[in-house]
Length: 182
Image 1 (cartoon, helix red, strand yellow):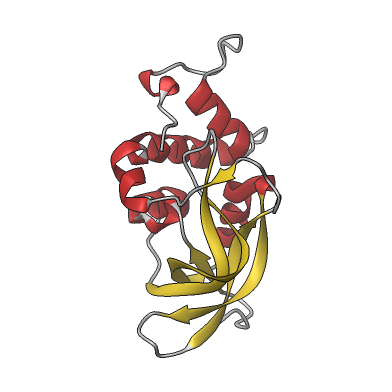
Image 2: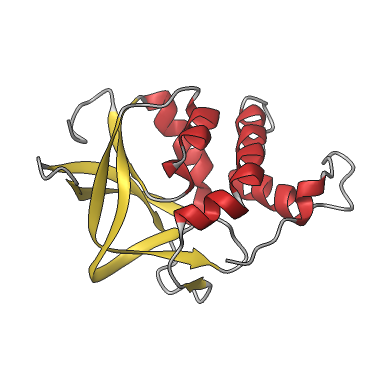
C-alpha cells in the first residue's frame, strides 16, 4: 500500500467522496478503502458551496478514508473533478485500525486564507441536505468529461446549482435552486 506503487494511487477523501454513490458516479466502481485520519489538517465548510475544504492546521485532524488502487485514468478524473480549487498533495495518513501510517494523495484547498472557509463540514448533514443534487451534478460532470469541449467541475457545479438563465444550452431543473445553508 502507499503512494509509491507506480501504477496505482492511494487517495485520502474527506468530503463528498466519502459517499460510495459519488465515487461510483465518477469512477464507475467503488475501490477498496480504509477508514483513516489525516493529522495536522482541518475540514471546513465553504460559504456558498455544499462540499468541504481541508487546509493544514497544526494539532487538528480530519477523519476520512483512503481509496486504494486508484489507476492513472481514475486519478485524472479525480484531478478534473477537484479542479483548480484544490491541489493534489502527498500526505501521511493514519489508518484507523492502527495498523500503519500510509502515504496518500489528498486534495488540499488552494487558498489557505480564504475568508469563505468557516465552521466544520458535516458528512451526515450533507447526505440529508445535498447528496441527491450533488450526485446528479457529479453524474452530469462525468458525462460531460467525455465530450471534447467539456466544462470544468467548477463550471458544472455553478451551472447546476446556480442556474444560467442566459445560456440555453444548460438545462434548468428544479435542483438549480438548491439551498446552500449548512
